[in-house]
Image: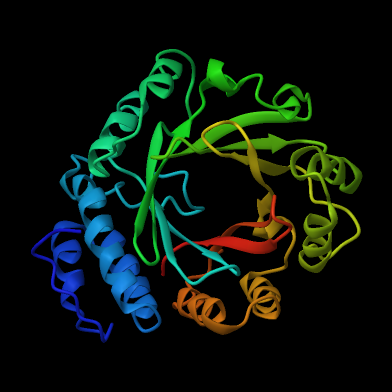
Amino acid sequence: MRSDTVIDTRGGTGAAWLAPMQQSLGADIAGPVAATLRRLGTVLPAQAAAAAGLLGDVLAPLGRSVWPEVAGSFSSLTNTGMPVEFSWSSREPVVRWAAEVAAPEVADRERLLLAAQALDWQGDLGPWLDLQREGAMSFGAWAAARHGEGTATKLYVDLPDGRLPAAWRDKHVLFRSNLMTWRLSGVNCDGSVEFYARAQELDWRALQGMAVAVLGDSAAMMAMLARVVPGSELPRPSGISLAFSADGSPRALSWFVVAKAMFRDDAEVTAKLRSLADGAPAQLYEALAAGPEDGRWRHGMIGVVADIAGRSWVQCGLRPT
């Protein structure tokens, strides 16, 4: 967070910590993002202020785009092209976001280094830069952060042509499965990594087998999945992610799908998520979802996560409004 940021712990409509972001970005980006952060500030004031400081720095290059008319609508992060997405988890009350790091005219192959610079990244980028030297990419890289008791940053890295880094290809049998196409990875400074894949034909039985293969037990994953999925079949296509510690030990498995593949509208998603959360996470969700409707989907990917300790939770991405 910038040293000149003033933290207004009231999180009110005049929160001073939002001023730099609003001054450096066009209204089509700054308006929805600032409004979302104000609402989050009523629940987690210090975390929302920290998010505003770092997110403002990350997004600043978009305010200098030579194509200002498309800077707020070019990203694959959200359904409208908004270059920021917030995310929510029933597990814990934290402020999470992911964002573009460069203007739309910047080549995808340049974005990983720019994301690392924006986050003052201290991890090893070598394997990921090598991987991106060749092949077709979808987005290049995104910057992300989680603001709880402290701030933890993450790089989302595009995997060209579905390739994995050489050091990871033999880490788990699921990396060789024909069911999945690997799309991106979430890389943490401590060396832990999460890999995300698109699955064309994933069903309940296959997912249960994956949970056993990754976690040793499927009970937590399948129980939460039954609470989230409204029908008797999984929507197709869907996706999974595998999270590993730096030494390659499995930590968690997630299943996810775009919300509109399972639910009628945003209101139905809201009703479902309200039924699955309480306490501070529930308050945080209400703040995220309370923005004005604009006639387009606000919920993005919704998913179920289970970890090696036998815990499970639901999570969802939301476009700022």
